[in-house]
Amino acid sequence: MNFNDLEVWFVTGAQLLYGGDAVIQVDAHSNEMVKGLNESGTLPVKVVYKGTVNSSPEVADTFRAANNDSKCIGVITWMHTFSPAKMWIHGLMDYKKPLLHLHTQFNKEIPFDKIDMDFMNLNQSAHGDREFGHIVSRMRKNRKVVVGHWSDEKVQGKIAVWMRVAAAWADAQDMRIIRFGDNMNNVAVTDGDKVEAEIRLGYHVDYYPIGDLVAYQDQVTEADIDELVAVYEEEYEWADNCKKGAKDHGQVREAAREEIALRRFLKDKKAKGFTTNFDALHGLDQLPGLASQRLMAEGYGFGAEGDWKTAALYRSFWVMGQGLPGGCSFLEDYTYHFDGEKSAILQAHMLEICPLIAAQKPRLEVHPLGIGGKADPARLVFTSHAGAGVAATIVDMGNRFRMIVNNVDVLDQDIPMPNLPVASALWIPQPNLEIGAAAWILAGGTHHTAFSYDLTNEYLEDYADIAGIELVTIYKNTTISEFKKELRYNDLYYMLNHSLQP
Ligand code: MN
Image (cartoon, rainbow, N blue to C red; front, side, top):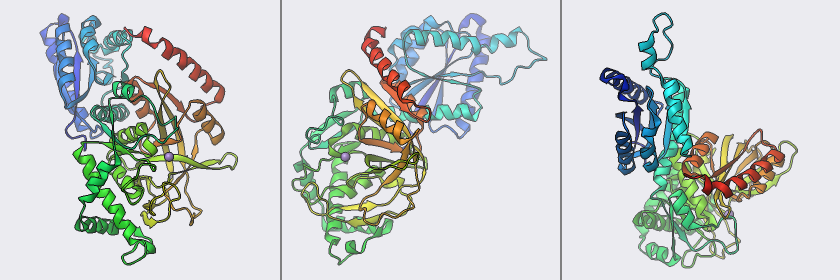
């Protein structure tokens, strides 16, 4: 997938009070701005100018058309002149997609030596946008407000972030996650209300017995496997025991068989993500680790042990980050390294870490796996590169979904770990392990996360606003006592939330 087929609509608010000439000028300015935005090279999604709206029916028609257009992933509004906001009520009541309010002005600087009332009346978004902002706030509608001149790269950067999030949101509205087996027995934090998830977050979760995948596996030919193993040879370093003729080469071939079957299965079911469960592998040779790693890199959402929420979140992370250089992965808080202010968490999993975050060419290895009672699985082993990133999760709090975000700093793993048979990342959660982990635990966060080097808090704030879910962020300024208060206030807010809706 990519962003080429998507559009963001640009709608300019005005009114006919100033006469037709003014509207013609407003229209010309809007065209020039949209052209400038598209030609800036900073926006990942094409902006399509939809004209000025001057009355309640025009506003309503435009928003309804946006709802019904499958290419349109969101609307940018801008009030060139004063646009009395009662005329936006019906359109906003109907509108269901992400909204960005660009608080800008056609003219960059005031022409102090020439300015007159005609100029003032044509460049009055300073108050026109306040009138519009009032009605959106009065209607309790979430939106992103971006302030600054439209030609400013920083302003365009904020629009670009929102576009990527809006694209992921659109992607989630027909996202199907397939679960092979159920959640790992007795585990609470990765479970939740799948009905509410579909209502609130858009994606749909379906169960399939592992036998259905085994039927696909039976259709995979030796020639199919030869072809995929040749790709592995191209892309990875190989451990000696995996090479052709060596003891574990057969395990690599079985891993390839599983990967081919899984990919075909997901394609046939039009699924965008999947979960596995090491307790539900009847008829498979091994836990599909290598397959999960490679499918994640292709953009399929993945969650281990039936974790469908993280599978969906990973998919959205991947969509948001398309074309950006850092990479993303499913990860799990595994083991601590206590060392004062440098205390860190080793992130890993039994096998399933996405090679998009690898610092070096991944190494294909086969080792025994104590859990699950299956044959030795193939996996890619690597460490991840140093850099800042975000780890996030969504948990079900019973009356709402809560997204928890933690800024983290991934360290160079310069000390070799020759006996660790899995991929890993070593990071310090912000502001440090003591506060970061305590806040995460107080918020009820999972051991599983979706992680990205490319996304920032701004992306996840946009996402939580669009979804209308709770967001708590653990970052460099977090203190435990303030964070506890935030959690308490949020509890109260979400108890009252229904009475706040119009
Ligand atoms: Mn796990």
